[in-house]
Structure formats: C-alpha cells, structure tokens
View (spheres, rainbow, N blue to C red):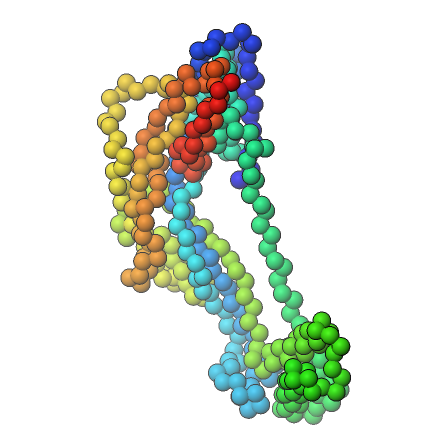
Length: 350
C-alpha cells in the first residue's frame, strides 16, 4: 500500500508548555485547519495460492510406451487446478464511521502524522525516512518453451511414416544419454578442457533430451494464480468461505461445481468491553483496542486454519491523552493499519 505523509506545521513559537492537540470527530470544514484521518475496520482475508496445470499431449504420445517405456501417457489434453497453500489473516479497510479531525490552532504543538493512501493513520512523529521500506517483489519470467523440431536430423524429418519418425527420435534420445554418460565418465572422444565447458555441453544435451522426450510425454505448463477472498467478520458457524473446483479453480460460493471450504468465527469476548453509557467523549488521538476472534477454516473434515486473530469490530476505541503531544516531549506512535491498534509508543524529551 502506498503511503502519504501529511505534515502539520508547528504553530506559534511561544506555545504553552502544556498546550494540547485538539481532536474532534468528523471532517471539519470552513475556517478550521488540520488533518482528517480514519481508523480501520477488520476484514478476514483468505489467500488461496493455486496452480493451473495445462497438459498438451506430445506428437508421438501413442508410441511413448513402445520406444521409451513411458507408461500412462495420455493422448488427450487436460486442464486442472491444484491448491498449493491457504493463508488466513486480517486486513484493514477504512471505517467511515470512525473519522477524526486533528485541529491546528494557536498554542499547540502539531504532530507529524503519516496516513495510508486510504486515509488510515499509520504513525505519529515517525517520518517514513527513518523506517525501512519493503522491497519490491520481482517475479521471475516464465520459462521459454523449446521447439523440439530444431534438434531433429534430416533422416528423422524425411521418415516415411509417423511411427518411423518416432522410432528415430527415440534412438536420438538414447544417443544423447550415451553422450552424457561418456562425458561424465571422461570417456568422450572430445572431452571439455574445464568444468565450465563441461557444464555448457551437459546443459545443451539436457535441453535436447528434454525437448525430444516431450514429443512422447507431452508438455505440462504450470501457471501460479492467487485468489483473495475477503469476509466481514461476524460470529458464524461453518459458513461457506469459498468453493474450489479441480477444473475451474476458485469459483463463486453458489457454484456447486466447486467443493466448499467452510469458515467459523467466534468472538472470544477479550478484552472485556464495558457497556457504553453514552458519556464517552473524544479526548485525544483515537485508536482501536481490537478484540480476539477464534477462526477455523475446514475442508473435507480437515482443519486448514485454527487460531485466534485480532478483529477490530469485536473491540473498542480508546484515546491517547492530548497532554502527551505537548512542547516538552515528542511522542512517537506506530499503529497497526489492519486493526488500528497500537504497536509502539515512545517518548523523547525535547
């Protein structure tokens, strides 16, 4: 998530030592100057890492067993999906019911606030330059498919029938294997002069062998794909979180072509939340105290996830006292943008 930093300029050098930062609810307009920030609410995020497998039969698939002793080689193309990994975690989204305004007024020391691009408060008095920025993940390029026909000899290409061509290709595969064995044993007529040259020769022979073998065994292309399912947490028991089909991947919850994956969420009632008497007022920088939820994710009577996660909606909202943000010291605060909870609070004397 991109970040943006909003600087709230310090006002009046003659500020009182005990002046406080004023915070109100809602978005202020008119003659008021300041910054608006939001607290997040929690969503349960299920990340399903899958692979799409695409099988294409080889040109000589019918002769795979006869010439290369490759059993169970299919002559029909096929597409199927597999699940590699399932992760369950929480994610924060802006809560439009929890909007706050930090007012800039006379005789206050205004803090440096960093917000996400969605307006969720991330930190106070902690410049981005002082914290590590996650490295960008670079995805490796897909492996190039080698055309096996560029390795075929004139004799193979001029064969009178497909069966004869398959026989000659198989013989060429065996010749390549014999050449590799001779190199590894040091019995080749033209041995390489060093290890680097030997590696190049073996790599080329392996490439040729694999390309020609795929003319019998077929090719299997694998494409990773990640699906992200988000659920608004509430108490639920064995409700369908998503469905997965071997032939279609992740499908809609009402698509009976997929097998169901069930989720259960239980409010652990921690921390204990006092009843709201309606007298609680905004007094300082707001933050969330998330509750705890016990979450299980099951499929085919097997538990894929069974643990507790923080959930904002099961908690409450508290406030950092305005007196903390005075001229005598600098208070640094780091928030969890997924829950709005406090991660760290430090004080530095000025």
